[in-house]
Image (tube, rainbow, N blue to C red; front, side, top):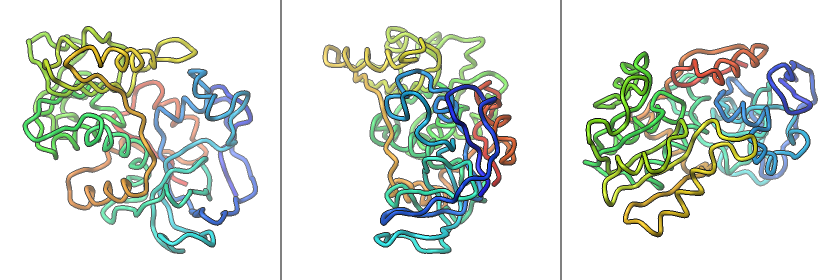
Length: 322
């Protein structure tokens, strides 16, 4: 089968399109004929092995999986002997350890139904970012109707879902993005957009019940000034920082400080869950959430797709058509 491969950590120059053997499903695995694969910022981190902390889970000296990519949408080609929730021919979404390929293995617990109203390309950008946003809004931030919610990084992959999910929960949402993306963020359900190139967060004195920080490296003290006295701050992103832990130091600082303040300061690490993928499909089919797919690339353009996302040019999500 055709697949994008990499032998070592590095930039997109390490990627090549190769012919490799098709994977064989184990007892609890689902073999998916990939129709489209999502590309997000996490793809870049796993490709480069930066910050170095990611190598603790994904390979110290080289990537454990020679095929990059996590998100996928496709059709079930075969199932393991113990799989009971899907069958051959089902249209599914899921997270694989290597989705930039014609065939990919997905553990049964990480596969869910493809939303009926989406194309394969749209569905392929739902799993990782959609799961992260759903669990952020529902579980970590505990957003309720009437809450004043600030989403920093509102035009990105996770942010575009977080704005929609918070608005669907009945929150009054403010998004932080560049002025060029303000109309896009409003179309997702934000009542107001702060252009970070021209306005500082908190300049108008607004204090938010919930702040979801998905971008940048703003200091905790700055974020807390805009948080209600008993509000919740969730830090789940932050590019930059050093090569060892990146922006993770802010999450650690928030968790350490939280017991000593009335504000709730926390972080979030998403779980890849088939049940939550099914919930996302329900929300999409109900018209409450929709993937923001900016553009697609072909499989042999994987390097271009990753560079496009890493450079910050994407308005929402990007997919590879396999």
